[in-house]
Image (cartoon, rainbow, N blue to C red; front, side, top):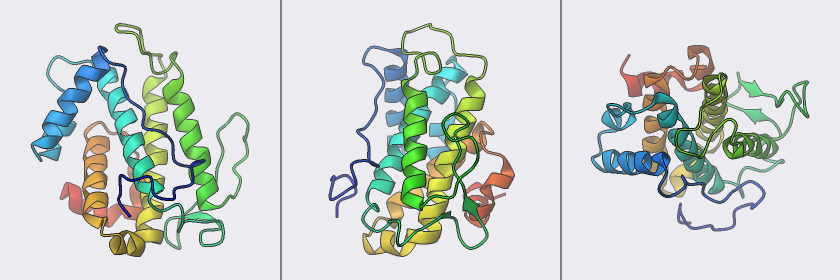
Length: 215
């Protein structure tokens, strides 16, 4: 199965790729990301470009990482099912329960695919909300923008943690481990650069994170 082919993905979980509007500042920053990623230097690719606005940089990268995780998880939807993954876990020590603070206020236990579905829907709602992620050039970001971004990245990390702990053998059989590892390395370097995820949240993959950062 091709990583970028739609294959037999569950369309409720896999969403169309989101992109920055053309002509916007986001589109210019997206070109910068693509150019620096093409150089193969991920540490350089995550740094805030000189003279650019931090919030703009966080916003465009949030969309990019959402797309990356969406595509990666989309290759596994036929293997990550309510019967194979009845709870959202990252190994035997870590289990995630879902709450969004709005429609589901008390954390509930759900299957991994349901958790990822809730998670992706929640992130997409944030990305589509122009009062949080403004589309117009020069429109202000809200005071709680960094908090929202941190929650987005914390939740995306949980999808990586589940993939590595529950589906890495399948990733290897699909010959996608190099792509997964590169995406995760990019994700770790970016979140570390801007201190977006608390160290305690990284515990399920801490040895891998440590090897990436060479702490």
